[in-house]
Amino acid sequence: MRVVFQIVMAGLLVGACGPLSIYYRPGVEVSRLESDTTRCQVIALRDAPVANQIRQSPPMYMPYYGYGGGYWAGGGIYSVDVNAELRARVLNMCMAEKGYQPVNVPRCSDAVARQVPFDPTQTLPSLSRNSCAIPYRDGTWQIVTPQVTTAAQ
Image 1: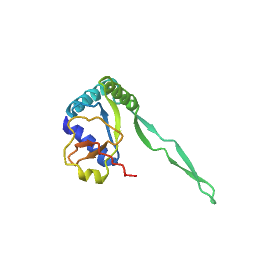
Image 2 (image 1 turned 30 degrees about the vertical axis):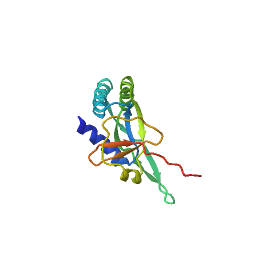
Image 3 (image 1 turned 90 degrees about the vertical axis):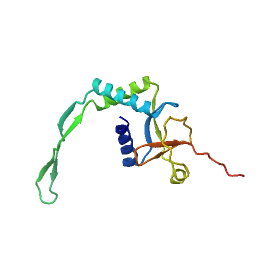
Image 4 (image 1 turned 135 degrees about the vertical axis):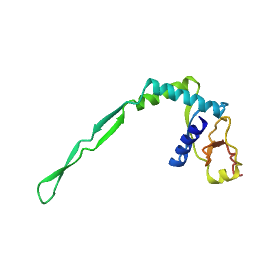
């Protein structure tokens, strides 16, 4: 279970190089977050199962300018999971019922990441305006709150 969560989180962090997007409740162990998330994902999938529909893009007429005539292009075939948005709402509701809220924790700067010893987060800390996340190659991550110093005036 933890491995799946780490793979998902690694994909989010490495693929997008953006913020750490997680469900958050201060003081909760990461292992509890993972099991709660999995349970809610199963509930969401049960209540809003994948419902793929095959669709076709409308074709477009492409005229030949200067030559007259033209041709039709496009009309590609694709599929859509019509329950995807509902499933996401069910997941969010389930996690909210457990006291979690979705948050995006920005990535730490390289300077901050170099100063912090490797210590993946085990318990979700309180977040502040300065909190940031350090992703690790093994799929774990660490949330830190660097001290902000103000320059003397």
